[in-house]
Image 1 (tube, rainbow, N blue to C red):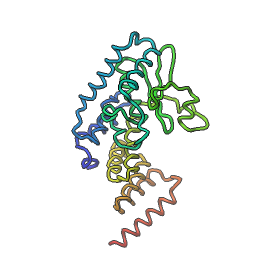
Image 2 (image 1 turned 180 degrees about the vertical axis):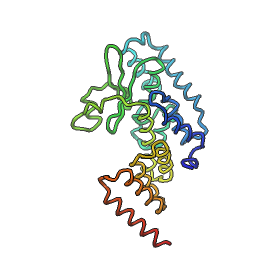
Image 3 (image 1 turned 90 degrees about the vertical axis):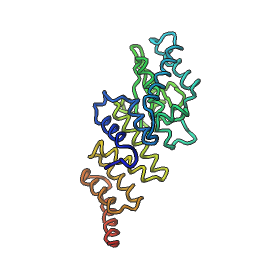
Length: 278
């Protein structure tokens, strides 16, 4: 059974169920905490949901007029980045804890998407509209009300940024309009899981990366790239026959893959290795 050795069956089922919902019906805070249960199986989700509630109530108490957009941003930023000390983890960016919402709330350290999620969830509790914006290689939020829109870089202390700043953050020559479009909740959850997969690869933990890939494939069995990445993880684990099968599945789903020749050569090499051991 996929993923059951890594997290409990109930957690795996909860994540798959969440990913299978319509994006608008996904509870982003609970989905993020289900992801956190990958690293902390005994995590009390209700406790951390209540922590987000508490932070929102504190901001509401500090604000003299939540209907005033600039005042909301100023009050929220002063509390989150001043009092709580939320900040980007520049020193250890690729640590798995940065992808776990409970640890972000405990330590104040995170990556752009998890810190943005904290901002979005607190704004939601205060009936403010804050969208996630998935720039290439970076994640920010956009505050919207009847009078204005403001892009906010939560990773860098809640700094209000303009489109030119966004282009620099995305490290692109031209910022295409779709890059500034709000992303739905399912996309955010999938991006968080993919970040965790990349962390485990970067830390040389292919077994953990494989189990995250198994979850992604359970949610979306026709995701070609996940099959290819699964082949890589299995290769690192010396599970050659399974690696070859994953690469074959990748080419079945994506027959016009630009790396088709390289993948076919890899499959041939793996088949030769397996045959030589039998």
